[in-house]
Length: 285
Image (cartoon, rainbow, N blue to C red; front, side, top):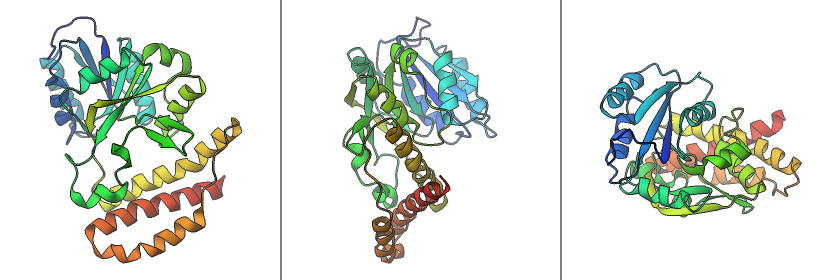
């Protein structure tokens, strides 16, 4: 681990809002990284109303390379941009306050960023999640970078690495988006000829929503953003396959018997919310 005040070679940006229940585990995992690299953590407190600030303050008092800046309550994209602006290293990684980086993550991400301008780290879903929610998104998160309709690959913002020169070229995260900001950011990189690399050894333990309410809200957010991204990319001349709402609705009905089990309810709620969110967003446009 590195506790010195040396000029960092990599900056870790964490956007946090009411993350008091989880952020200590993430900071513990970062501080426990076995590496000689000089690093810094910039936590952006996005107007939390719980104990997030005091927890981060405690870590900052012990670790000179951890500091906190204040967000404006404008959402995760704005918070990440604020953290990036406040950071200083030539390489930047973004992780979430409710996940946990695995041992070796920092060295693997730094190694990948020394060779590639944009990096997608790996995600692991069993360490932090109960069995009943694991099938809400299947195993595709663990198989490599995200794929947008097979057109381009994207890095999930909970484990995304980027060289600062790329940020200077394409800009930061789109602050108008409430979800899908990592897809849109990766799209701009792709359009700019910036290749995405996959760092299989840079593992983050990813936390799913575990309550039905949380799954519904997240599914709705993901669904609402799909038509917006589709319109934006299509207007840019990219051929994006249309969604099949009728088939999706039939799927919802067919999966209703699964509501009898906890696993089935979690799956049904998340995926149904995504379909409804997408239909509602498309009809409003």
